[in-house]
Length: 616
Image 1 (cartoon, rainbow, N blue to C red):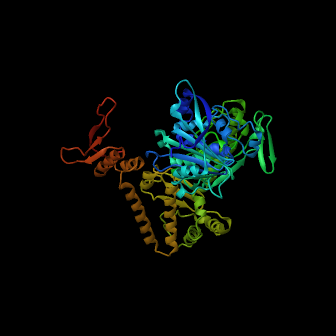
Image 2 (cartoon, one colour; image 1 turned 90 degrees about the vertical axis):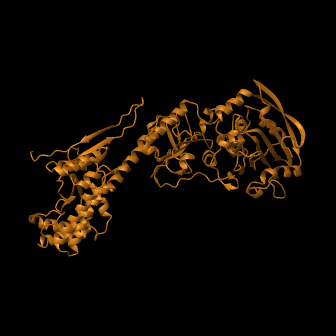
């Protein structure tokens, strides 16, 4: 059964269209196949459908394949099918009662031409008032500067319609749609839009990207349910925790900075009336983590500005509305949802952008100002609060009393009792401060004070331990000259890992004393731990600070100096080997630098010798 000729012709549908317009659609206006497909769904929305079924085959390159959209909307009679093909004209906005029922998206009467990108033939079959009417557009028949052609308006009976559409619906969810087209339970009206003789461009449709567009770009209306190959398409959701939310027009400090602006509330709904744009609503949502990363980021954005006009997203792929970049850290965590129906008069013909105008400029000024003065400021304040939480003092406060406070308190009591003589990591406190220190640590349980309130970095010496703890000042001094610290100080984005290692060493010493182990054994254990950290730091290619310290220490030792120079060259990036022996250099170092743009080899080699002196 040929869908292009089936049925009885009842009339002609005159179509007048320029082939150049068709080419423009193909080349630019609707060059995205995903967006072109969305236009069919928009027609269903404007037809007051509450259920829409979308079908795409798994293999869009297979011969004879097709795609279709079916809705249970108001359907088309013979006159309405003719009106549908009046290019550049749309009656949707002429009847204000339609807007009262559901804000209409289409207004230019050209959206249907987007299907040219996807297929050579587009067929509409519709049921209304008990009749089944259809017409097929064959785009290949359009050529020349201005083309006039007639489409056959045809009618079929229910039996023919059932047989015809069963061919197209069999692959959809086992042939079962979300509403009945025929039979006792059939809906009173529906429209079936079928794309056949598909173009190669259709193969660019990405299922993930298309679903994201359908979830995000179409109006979020509880009375509009969309099904993709039998699965319901849920509205876009974000699982990232929210830090803060700002309602447009509610306690709006930014709105107050605009001349003539009025904020209103009606039944819990807030809006702003600007001088040149009325009834703006929405929200600014700041999330805890970035919305840019993750597997779904390639399908469609979750961050940035989402401008909705009459319920439909306008700036699908433009998160900034053409403005200069905002602060990335905060902006990538922010979702700005704006509803501005009055901008409908400023839409471009493709409904994908807003024309530059005073109302649009005023809205963008508001968005940018609110983001910078409220959202961004809150974000950086929160970052500072989180940074405070990442301090050693805060982290220690999260540990149990038996892990940190009790061992240090017991150490102090045992030291002043004369049971501890020579600790390795904990500085010996002054006897004159005995009572002050003991009283302070006894109060820690109630006051919440920590055994370490401050951390500082100082170059004690390469032979000194990794850290020292001053009980009176509650000060942890980390030895930046220690090989382990020197080697890894620049390996982390922040110093917390190294601080954690240092405090763990200090608390370990306090725990050993608390367990009643002999001080000589404690000293031996802590020194061996310190030696292990040193050897770990020097076992691989070292960082520049570590090899600099090693070089300095080896100046007066001929054998050690040879090894130190070898390590320095390794750290600088040379491929280095040791040679040695009579009449031979201590080693050879190769710099592998590749070639320049002219093909000239840039690599070079050098030999080295190390000579030491006992003199200053």
